[in-house]
Image (spheres, rainbow, N blue to C red):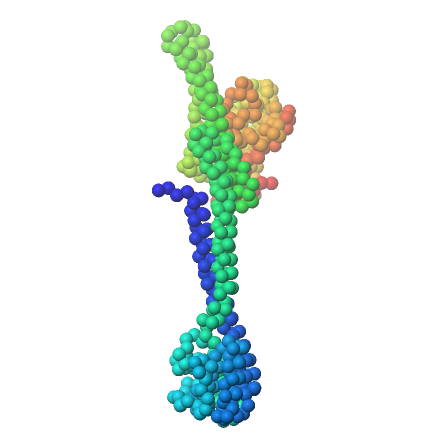
Length: 471
């Protein structure tokens, strides 16, 4: 049987409220009763002292005993307590609790031993000898005559009966408090569940593919934080899904074009439709170019996948910055010459430890990107300089530049600053560079302005155990 969280909350709150009210009422009543007993004892002591002072020294004489008994009865009626007089031997001389007050000689009762008349034992002794239970009493000495003690006794049940109306009020108050607490608990449960219901609906919608969900919760507590976190997650998932959709569309388009070219030109050559050797070489060159384009897209995707999966492990070795830049220059100089771009390289003598292949891939991607966005007759400069514990590679071009708005997004995956119809890539190059730089423990920066060219700075540690420092 399924029990909702709302029902569990309400039931738990009601149970806790009931137990708390019952326990607190019981403890309050006990404390109140103890206070009433203490107050009664204090009152009995005061009345006993007054009565003891009232009795004359001849209270024990047979002639005065009748007057003494009358005074005791009046005092008993006035105080509502039982009054007892014990002589020096511990015998009961007068007792308002008896059906008839005896006059004349004191009745011969077994005396109360002196050891049992100590204050800490007197209460139990009176209960046993006088047939009482749960009593509050006061005992004061009789100063006149042959001595003795005056006892004023009130049973606890009499005090309880006097507290009856207060107990009824306490019970009624507890019941009212219980219902108020139950209503408050129900309201609290509904208040807590309302935003959770919204979250449940939003999660179900996300499960159906509606990733962009917003849950409005006006609460500055953990539930409000949960709703805010969910909204951020929903936005991120929607963004990632949209980027994935765009990526799939862009990659499909980018792969379709070179694959179509490869298929078409290879078919023409295989069918023998091109007899001219020079024309065949031209077609083979196109096929080779398109193949490299596909290979680059696949390699970028594989690199990002490996980094995301945590399986990318750099292979560190001792490197020379001059050798790295020389290899990059040889690789991209033909591409620069095709656009009449001057590619200058500063072969600095800097030694450092890192993954040479990955470093060449990072700087190579930046150089290729610079050639792509630099017009005919432009210039590209590649250099390296030492910066404390790091080596800084710079790639500067005289291209079209990047707007401030695009500079914040160029490292996002699948983002392209140019229009898709003019693009020759899928927006992965700079994303791959950033991911690789971070995996090597480095950092990357960009400085650019529209029409003034762009400069990328890559900071890599000279030793993988150190952190690169920017100037």
